[in-house]
Image 1 (cartoon, rainbow, N blue to C red):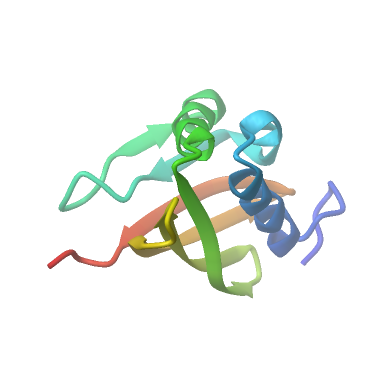
Image 2 (image 1 turned 45 degrees about the horizontal axis):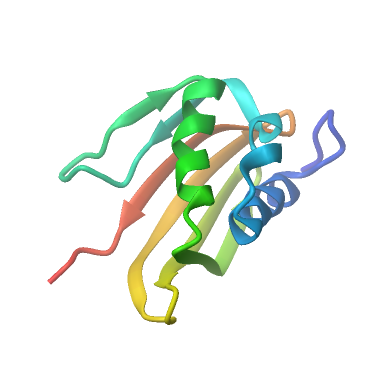
Length: 122
């Protein structure tokens, strides 16, 4: 499904993921809807809710800027405006720190919501 920006949901999420790979949040806010809602992976059991382009941009910007970790996309599935992304986070030595998924909704070429889930720890 294409949007008014010309980018489909998978393309928008690919650009989002590129900001993590580059550790550069500069382009992030341009991908977020003004009323973006983020449901974070923690704290347990339900996470927290972050609302608005600026607040979501700040939250993700802090994660993106952390050069001590690497964010890798393992798999992605798109259906209409929804993109589900399975990911892992590695430390500088390549050891696994976290695995999880994000469920994104993209409307008119912008991320309108994201819901994050983590694998449970031991």
